[in-house]
Image 1: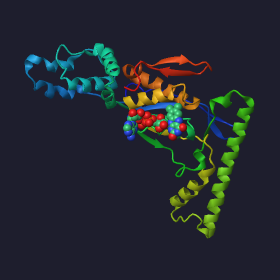
Image 2: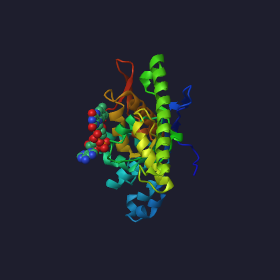
Image 3: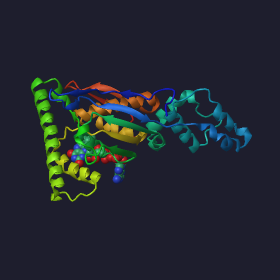
Image 4: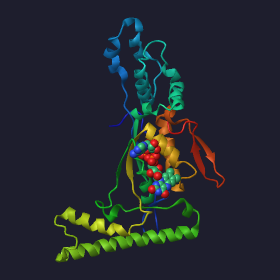
Amino acid sequence: MPTETRLPAIDASVLHTDGGTPYLREPGVVVLAVPATDIRGMAVFLDGYDPALGFPAYLEDPTVLPPAEQLCKTAGQVCYASFGPKRTWNVDAGRYIANIKASGHGSVLEHATFSLLCYGVSRSLTHELVRHRAGTAASQLSQRYVSGRVLRFVERPEYRDDPELHRLFCARIDAAAEAYARLTEMLLDRQRAGQQLLGAEERTDLRKKVQQCSRSLLPNETEAPLVMTANARAWRHIIEMRASPHAELEIRELAFRIYRVLCEVAPLLFGDYAEYRLPDGTRALETPHPKV
Ligand SMILES: Cc1cc2nc3c(=O)[nH]c(=O)nc-3n(C[C@H](O)[C@H](O)[C@H](O)COP(=O)(O)OP(=O)(O)OC[C@H]3O[C@@H](n4cnc5c(N)ncnc54)[C@H](O)[C@@H]3O)c2cc1C
């Protein structure tokens, strides 16, 4: 269902080797979902208190916040019943959220979740990404259920500008795609010939059993798109771990892109990160408020 403003995306284009094998050179990140916050329904709740407290005016704040920030701020303000005229108004939400970060009350940030589609990422990258468990959910392309028609690869940053490494990469993925197709056909032939090598009966089951076997030859540089949902606290932790100088280049590039799109949709939750250059010319992110 389209909203008035489109959610941000950082695109990544698909290239092809001379042999026709598709590959990507950088991660694409698409924001699929952000919180949909509507606090108007709090009217009856606020009206139920002593009128002298002036709580109903909480809904008359003239400053409109992005939905994630409004959600976290309202959740935090419920803790102290901060609805009266002396509360922090939305115009000062930046200071309010900075206080939450500085005092380490990160659970308030767990209310806001963001779902991102990440593509142009390799299987070795996603193997690391899905290690983040707390506050996250991941749905990843299944190499058992999809056929070679959606097989794509990811070129590592180190290969892109080195003609020899790039040529070897192209040759390697052409060979991998061909070997995958050949092995899949061989397995299907054997199965059709009645060998019941894989013990499959139904047609989809047959494909699945063939693909779960032939995927064994796919390299780490096979693309593994996934949708990852995480709350703001978890995304912050992921950004800190994966845009750090200790993280490897591919996942660091993804972490930068995740940071950039999240900054667009929730600047007060993610705007405290600063980019800095490392001696090797690459970049990393840091914040004065790690692990809130
Ligand atoms: C540079 C780098 C190198 C790495 N190298 C390796 C490696 O060589 N081998 C390897 O296996 N892994 C490696 N990892 C992965 C790492 O060990 C973690 O599994 C991964 O970073 C997930 O982070 P997390 O443990 O903070 O979990 P998250 O799920 O992101 O959890 C966030 C935070 O929640 C808390 N938390 C989560 N689960 C629990 C729990 N069960 N009990 C208590 N508190 C919890 C912790 O405070 C945790 O930091 C590496 C990670 C990085 C960034």
